[in-house]
Image 1 (cartoon, rainbow, N blue to C red):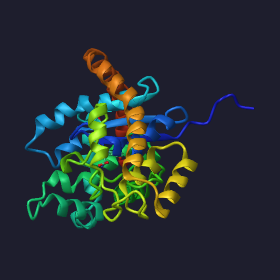
Image 2: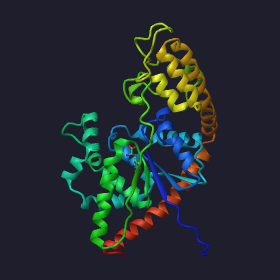
Image 3: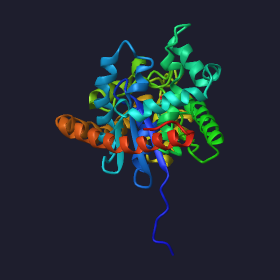
Image 4: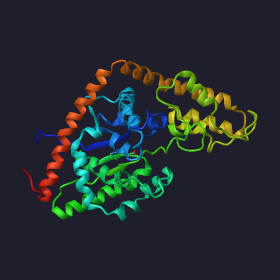
Length: 338
Ligand code: TRP
């Protein structure tokens, strides 16, 4: 029997560094990252270059949040000796691969990408679409292929980006007649996007409906107290609706006691359970979830040199890995090399 172990599949996640992460990120991705790091080779890319594609007038914000997002990852339990945390803009091979890949995708195809189409609408670019923004699927292809990642945890909205990644991969493999690059699969969390505390849309800092991972107990309390429930559930004795009731959505996401939540739902439907009782339960659970994260985050932010060291060593490792892929692509394409 061979003593060599099979290579572990590589996971790459990216966080655009536009603001500190919140409970929505925790449920949708951070929690999974922590679970996956033991069994996979994992990279967390702080995607500041991609964040610039729709924040070009706010470079300071993007830059400042590199550290904030690093702190969030470390605070939830990402182990920097196990997971490599690295900074996108400090990885020249990603920019070089992007430039190459842009020759293997048409402007029309980029414009047809459903994610890009939606995001252009949401951002209200009109005809003034930053070229970098339109082309970010090619840049993300560079990210994914450079790390040789085959598993990419993303929200469902990012699936078309991964599909386009695989198109570019297949094109280059066909062209070079080799398995130069690997196709990747999107890992979409089973639990959907966490709604904001207003219940209106997904949790987002810009909507003012987010609970940050640094929230204090009283901030958590006031966020839950103003949470949307069932507007027709006026008295505790009234039958209430569970669907679309944000407090239940959060209990489903955070309460480890699934059976107890099922009983609470039944009682709420029948009538006899007041919103406040339910909210008190959620407040306690969220406070318990956030407290260790908040404390670890505060501790780490008092040690900026440690965080900088994590970023320096993670980025140094990533620089090697991504450079090797870039070399292989240049070689595979038969480019001139000095
Ligand atoms: N586009 C991703 C998002 O908005 C962020 C991202 C950048 C990413 N590079 C990546 C995700 C590479 C996965 C892999 O969520």
